Length: 419
Image 1 (tube, rainbow, N blue to C red):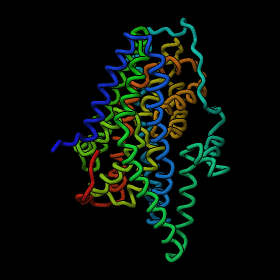
Image 2 (image 1 turned 90 degrees about the horizontal axis):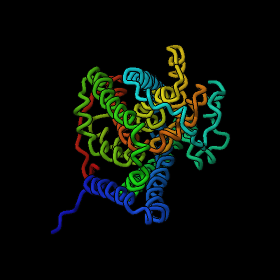
Image 3 (image 1 turned 180 degrees about the vertical axis):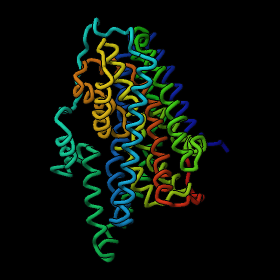
Image 4 (image 1 turned 120 degrees about the vertical axis):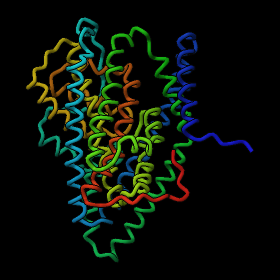
């Protein structure tokens, strides 16, 4: 009997094959345009769209079930503690990114200001409109439109309000709808498995396109930023998240080992969206109560993006250095407050980092052209950044559960296949 190749091995094969095909296309440019535009890019985009397709119904159903199941009082306690933790850790991540940028200065010497400015066309709204309007923008005028446009913060806001209202009903009227939404969540987990079967093809296509687009000339001035990003991510994971894990009686290395498959998938695909079901299932298997996982992890996908927050600080400082813009300590303190807000609008899918950077640069008065200069090689940095996002969201439910005074009793999930 032929042994079936597991998903991680398939993804690894797709990753290696994508690199090889991308390199070959650089040697055969006559085939590159057609293959990239007609085959590889559509195949990669299909994978990204499939991942985006999952996230809104999954987040909405899990959030409402988590809130309605635990009740309004638990929501207030767990939700408040989660948000306090999220804002604290992502704030530290931004400061850490700025610290590394100041220490290693990846943008010094690039002198992009003397080069021809690239055109930036990033769909982001005015981010310098003040805190009040930023918060107001979270409230959806039309929740169906918010879901259709995948505005995750607006969807979360409505899910919280809807869940609180549902939890206030008596059990007889509440349970039927909770059961329906639980069935929706369970169905979305199955849909996720279907999408994951396509993931090796999607990863192959995305990597092939990325490698075929990189030239030595574009890599050289940004090589230092790539290296610094990897160093910063590793140090933040080991030192900062390691310290947090130690404070709650856990080991960050044990957590990395437990979620290694999800981290590899997030790293190779540069998307954290499809590992959400596995984060929930494995967190529950490690003893975290379902009432915590179903609230903390979906909420974390918008509010606990450690990797995105770190790179927001590092990338913004890199662009300032590359364009020879001096930022004082007061300027960088202000950047922290700006990025704490702009980083909360990111979702666990590729491309949202450009929205964060553009919003931050616009609010800080820095050259928006820097986004286009980073975009050419961001794929290489998006992989560790996304993996750090996933690691942060694997640790978060443990921290909140321990904060709640819950003891973790690990169990074995029957029939679960880790990916």
